[in-house]
Image 1 (cartoon, helix red, strand yellow):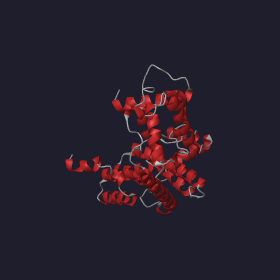
Image 2 (cartoon, helix red, strand yellow):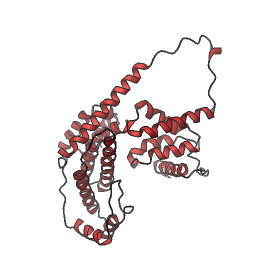
Image 3 (cartoon, helix red, strand yellow):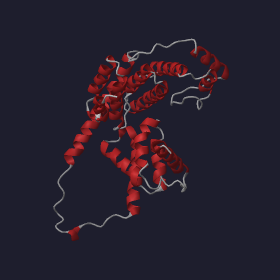
Image 4 (cartoon, helix red, strand yellow):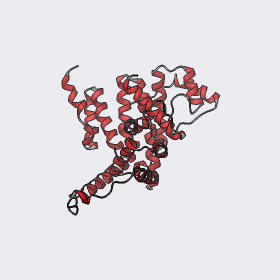
Length: 318
């Protein structure tokens, strides 16, 4: 492969304005450069997730890029992330008094998901299970289940009805979601700037090493972590500032409290696999969670530990 393409992959594109990322993605698509398009749309997704938001539009565009590229397995995963993003964004918008239209988007995306599963060569019986039981087949937050007869009919129709997939098929429906996202991004930027302005030079009150205050005990540190986790649960992830997110990631890396690990699992359990990955990566640096033979006493904490171990095994190719 030509090494000239590598710089695009190496750049932290998420530092660019969202509009520029979307534009870059479409320019890559116009040249049928699906990989670069995915990098741009992926950067827009990361930009939103860094402040615990979901970029529904960018999720969809990346799904379509994968679909046109012929990477149907990854396209299915991305479509699921997009469906979850619609649900999560809508729920958060309601808390702010915004009603976002979800019916058309969810219906269209679920049809696109089924078509991609068919092209992926899922069997008739796999599709029946997908429709019949919410926990079977591919799962997403707003998924509905049907009776066995209805599931069989839907599976049969999946092989006979084609959904035309294009980038602009939900263009108008995405506008309220994008407007809400941009409003939240602007708020996050303002909060970040405010935090940076408050940073002052170190205090000059301490004139010698003997004047240093006593260091807090581990119990005091863990209690502070617990208080922060309670605050984050009340706010919900989407309302956390950049400073809060950095503190949460720090807690993931260093806490030695099983109860705090359980609280982290409660806090992040609502996230899809891609959204949760940044926290799993931080948790994978926590010594308490990477000891394979030592189970944790609380169920939620142990469940999160197993998820971290699975992540490490996949990353290391064990």
